[in-house]
Image (cartoon, rainbow, N blue to C red; front, side):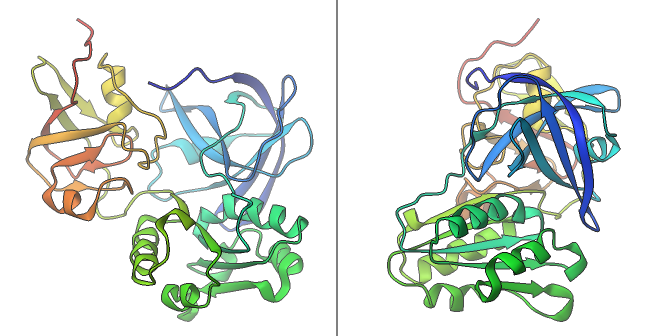
Length: 326
């Protein structure tokens, strides 16, 4: 279970467009906002089909007393981005003080920053912080097309030839092997993008013989393998079957049904909420980066916070004795 987090009242102060599908939202926050580092996140209390839910977004550099985020309107949104895009100036909501699980380490002699799509949000803050300190860096930013690249003009002005934009629509893609081969020995790489990009980067980094501790990353979004449908999970040794709607995670559904769960990152990175899959009627859509490729191939486990069953039902073992509500 997560540690206690600090919720604040906030009001929308500014809305503007960053890219065709990305909107900048700045919030005036009640009380002092502690200083936060690039890569930090805030939780937002949103409403989806009349139900309360929590969504997490990377916080951007913002004026004192504000918290700002960049929100992509996902075509397969579970409702969070649609809610955030529906906000208007002056509207109130609740959010948390930023916390950081994707910290920038200042030990490296050189930094390679890699961003895919909306993964630019933490990378943008890192680029600004590193440039302000005069650090050696290179940023490679890929997206499906140039109009979808948030912050591209600002980063071009800031970094000049230290920035490489890769427009997928023009056949331009990140050559991970070449990027890693060009790095000095003391370099670190920070990456945020879709799961496929991350898995490819991990493989290329290992093939280059570089230390795993110097590749730091986080992931976002769904895998896109299956459309999101309702499925049912039955918990071993419990007289309980829980329906997981398209607009919620399995973790949210289990907690809502009174099942005690251990969890932390809610991004498929820490593995605390991974459950054992004993039986299933359909394929698992693995959206985490914690489980190994072998575990994913065996379909023996799945991270409850991000992974889904394509449809049908599964029997799971939560791995410890929790308490279910009667």
